[in-house]
Length: 508
Image (cartoon, rainbow, N blue to C red; front, side, top):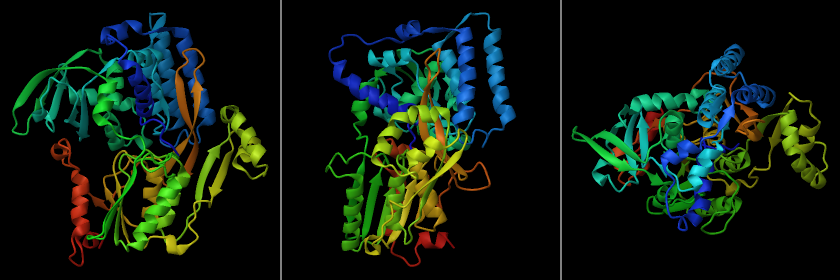
C-alpha cells in the first residue's frame, strides 16, 4: 500500500523539482497578496453538487467507510456542510473555503491514505515562485519547536527553541485548527503531528485558515527561558528543497564489523531503483543480506522512520529475509464502478499478458460492485533458508512510519520477529487502507484520492497505534543541530555487551 501524500507532501516536492529548473529565469517572486487575488470562486450550487458526489464516491469505493466513524455521524456531517453552504448569502465560494470543507469531510473517515489535493491557484502560486513559512517544526504534545530555519533573518541560536506565536496567534491554537483537516488512521494524534512537521504541509493548511504573508512575526522561548520576537521573511519552496537536498529514495546499508552491528535505512517501499548504485530493490536486499550473513553480523537495525509505505510486496520481501517463516500477504480490494473505470486500460494490458481467471485484474473486473476480493501472494517468499538473517533485529519506527512500512512493523510484532523501537507509528493496530483511485469532482475539479483496499489486522477496531516495545523519545534541541538522538540511544543499547542486556531485561 502506498501513502501517496503524507498530505500533499509528495505532490509538492515533485512540483518543486520541476519548477526549480525554471526558477532562475524568473525575475520576481509571486507575492502572498497576488495569491489571494488569484483565488477562483466557485458557484455555490456547483459546490453543493460536488459535496454530494464526494459522499457518493466514498460510499461506493471505500472498503470500510464506517470503520471509525459511524454512518449516522458521517452522513449527518455531510448534510450539515451542505446546509451551511446553502444558507450562505454569497452565491460563490472561494477555492480555499471549499477545499477546507472537503478536507474536513475526507478526514472524517479517519483513513490516512484518503486525501484531497490542493487547488489550481495554489499550484500556480508555487510555480510562480510562491513563498513559504521559513521554519520547519518538531511537534510534541501540541507544542512546536524550531527544527530547521530557512530564513536569513533568524540566527542559528533559535534552533530547538519553543515556537510560541506566529503573527500574534498562539501556535497551540494554529495546530488545533489544522488537526481536523489532516487525514490519519483512527485520527492518531502523533501521525498528524508528524504531518505538520513538513513545512509545505504546515503552509498549505496555514493559507487555508489564515492570511498568507511574505513576512512573519514569530515569538519563541529559548532554552534559558527567555522569550524573543523576530520578523522573518518567507522563502521559496526551492530554497527549502535545496537546503534539505535529500534523495527521494534512500536505501543504504552501513556495517560496523568491530561492533558486529549493521544499520539498514529504507525510507520508502516504492518500486524505484537505488540512485547510488543502480541496483533494484530486490538486488539491494539480496546483496545486503548476503553481506550480513557472510560477515556473521549479530545485530541489525532496520530504520523505517519517515517511511510512508509503497508496495506491499517490498515490505513482505524484507520481512521474509529476517523471519524464520514465510508469511503470505493478504489484501482485500473493493470492486466498484470507479475502480473498474480507472483500471480499465491496465486491466486490458495485464489480461493480454496473463489470461488466468485468477489474475488480480480478471478477478476485480468480473466482481460485482461492492464485493471485497481477497488478493494473496507468495511471490515475496525466501525459499532458501541460508539466505535468511538469524541475528538480532531492531525495527526503528516513528509517527511517520505508515502503510506498507507499518504493515512490516505489525508483522514483526505479531510474528515475534525482532524488537520494535522508537515511537508509535502512523497506522492503526486494527486495519490499514490503500490502493488509491483518483476522482475529479465534476464542477470544481477538486482531486480526491480514495482508498479501495483494506488489510484486516484485528477484529477489535480499537483506535490504537502500533506501539514500540522500547520507547525512545527524541531530543529536539540536539536533532535541530544535526543530531539523531533516537538512533544514538538505540546504538548505545545495542552496543552494550553486558548480559543480560538492558533490552533483554525490558522484555521480561
